[in-house]
Image 1 (cartoon, helix red, strand yellow):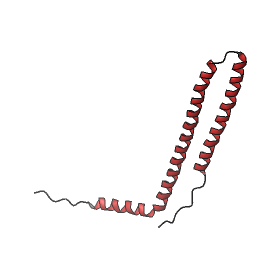
Image 2 (cartoon, rainbow, N blue to C red):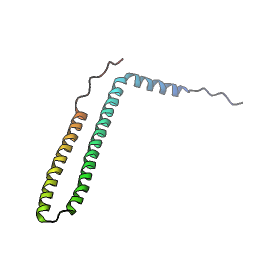
Image 3 (cartoon, rainbow, N blue to C red):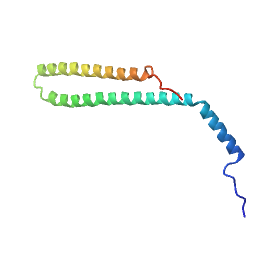
Image 4 (spheres, one colour):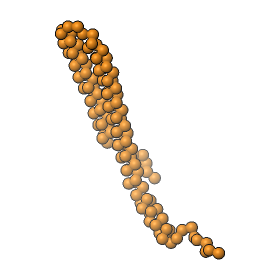
Length: 118
Protein backbone atom coordinates (compact mmCIF):
# COMPACT_ATOMS: atom_id res chain seq x y z
CA UNK A 1 0.00 0.00 0.00
CA UNK A 2 1.49 3.39 -0.96
CA UNK A 3 2.34 5.93 1.70
CA UNK A 4 -0.23 8.66 2.22
CA UNK A 5 1.19 11.93 0.95
CA UNK A 6 0.83 15.03 3.09
CA UNK A 7 -1.14 17.81 1.37
CA UNK A 8 1.80 20.24 1.55
CA UNK A 9 5.47 19.57 1.64
CA UNK A 10 7.75 21.69 3.86
CA UNK A 11 9.02 23.54 0.76
CA UNK A 12 5.44 24.41 -0.26
CA UNK A 13 4.69 25.60 3.28
CA UNK A 14 7.77 27.85 3.15
CA UNK A 15 6.80 29.27 -0.26
CA UNK A 16 3.24 29.86 0.94
CA UNK A 17 4.53 31.67 4.03
CA UNK A 18 6.85 33.85 1.96
CA UNK A 19 4.04 34.78 -0.44
CA UNK A 20 1.65 35.58 2.41
CA UNK A 21 4.28 37.77 4.06
CA UNK A 22 5.09 39.53 0.79
CA UNK A 23 1.42 40.31 0.07
CA UNK A 24 0.63 41.29 3.67
CA UNK A 25 3.57 43.69 3.74
CA UNK A 26 2.68 45.24 0.40
CA UNK A 27 -1.09 45.68 0.57
CA UNK A 28 -0.84 49.48 0.25
CA UNK A 29 1.52 49.13 -2.72
CA UNK A 30 -0.79 46.64 -4.44
CA UNK A 31 -3.79 48.92 -3.84
CA UNK A 32 -1.87 51.83 -5.38
CA UNK A 33 -1.06 49.74 -8.46
CA UNK A 34 -4.71 48.72 -8.72
CA UNK A 35 -5.80 52.38 -8.53
CA UNK A 36 -3.27 53.54 -11.11
CA UNK A 37 -4.22 50.87 -13.63
CA UNK A 38 -7.90 51.50 -12.96
CA UNK A 39 -7.48 55.22 -13.66
CA UNK A 40 -5.37 54.46 -16.74
CA UNK A 41 -8.00 52.07 -18.07
CA UNK A 42 -10.81 54.57 -17.46
CA UNK A 43 -8.76 57.30 -19.16
CA UNK A 44 -8.09 55.13 -22.20
CA UNK A 45 -11.75 54.14 -22.40
CA UNK A 46 -12.81 57.79 -22.27
CA UNK A 47 -10.28 58.71 -24.95
CA UNK A 48 -11.44 55.95 -27.28
CA UNK A 49 -15.08 56.87 -26.72
CA UNK A 50 -14.39 60.51 -27.62
CA UNK A 51 -12.42 59.51 -30.71
CA UNK A 52 -15.23 57.25 -31.91
CA UNK A 53 -17.76 59.99 -31.22
CA UNK A 54 -15.75 62.45 -33.32
CA UNK A 55 -15.13 60.00 -36.18
CA UNK A 56 -18.73 58.84 -36.25
CA UNK A 57 -20.06 62.39 -36.34
CA UNK A 58 -17.64 63.51 -39.02
CA UNK A 59 -18.26 60.39 -41.11
CA UNK A 60 -21.98 61.18 -41.11
CA UNK A 61 -21.26 64.81 -42.05
CA UNK A 62 -18.88 63.76 -44.83
CA UNK A 63 -21.46 61.36 -46.30
CA UNK A 64 -24.04 64.12 -46.29
CA UNK A 65 -21.50 66.47 -47.89
CA UNK A 66 -20.98 64.05 -50.77
CA UNK A 67 -24.72 64.08 -51.43
CA UNK A 68 -24.84 67.87 -51.28
CA UNK A 69 -21.76 68.20 -53.49
CA UNK A 70 -23.47 66.28 -56.26
CA UNK A 71 -26.33 68.79 -56.16
CA UNK A 72 -24.02 71.75 -56.93
CA UNK A 73 -24.52 73.05 -60.48
CA UNK A 74 -22.25 76.11 -60.69
CA UNK A 75 -18.76 77.03 -59.54
CA UNK A 76 -20.36 79.52 -57.13
CA UNK A 77 -22.41 76.70 -55.58
CA UNK A 78 -19.22 74.67 -55.17
CA UNK A 79 -17.40 77.58 -53.57
CA UNK A 80 -20.21 78.32 -51.10
CA UNK A 81 -20.67 74.68 -50.22
CA UNK A 82 -16.92 74.11 -49.86
CA UNK A 83 -16.53 77.10 -47.60
CA UNK A 84 -19.45 76.08 -45.36
CA UNK A 85 -18.19 72.51 -45.25
CA UNK A 86 -14.65 73.58 -44.28
CA UNK A 87 -15.91 75.90 -41.52
CA UNK A 88 -18.18 73.19 -40.06
CA UNK A 89 -15.47 70.50 -40.26
CA UNK A 90 -12.92 72.80 -38.60
CA UNK A 91 -15.36 73.59 -35.81
CA UNK A 92 -16.20 69.91 -35.30
CA UNK A 93 -12.54 68.89 -35.15
CA UNK A 94 -11.69 71.73 -32.76
CA UNK A 95 -14.51 70.73 -30.42
CA UNK A 96 -13.55 67.05 -30.68
CA UNK A 97 -9.92 67.73 -29.87
CA UNK A 98 -11.04 69.90 -26.95
CA UNK A 99 -13.08 66.99 -25.56
CA UNK A 100 -10.14 64.62 -26.05
CA UNK A 101 -7.84 66.98 -24.18
CA UNK A 102 -10.38 67.30 -21.37
CA UNK A 103 -10.63 63.52 -20.99
CA UNK A 104 -6.83 63.19 -21.07
CA UNK A 105 -6.28 65.90 -18.47
CA UNK A 106 -8.85 64.29 -16.19
CA UNK A 107 -7.18 60.89 -16.58
CA UNK A 108 -3.73 62.30 -15.84
CA UNK A 109 -4.82 64.67 -13.09
CA UNK A 110 -4.37 64.06 -9.39
CA UNK A 111 -6.26 61.07 -8.06
CA UNK A 112 -9.25 61.42 -5.79
CA UNK A 113 -8.50 61.44 -2.09
CA UNK A 114 -7.95 57.84 -0.99
CA UNK A 115 -10.36 56.24 1.41
CA UNK A 116 -9.22 54.98 4.82
CA UNK A 117 -6.92 52.02 4.71
CA UNK A 118 -7.26 49.44 7.28
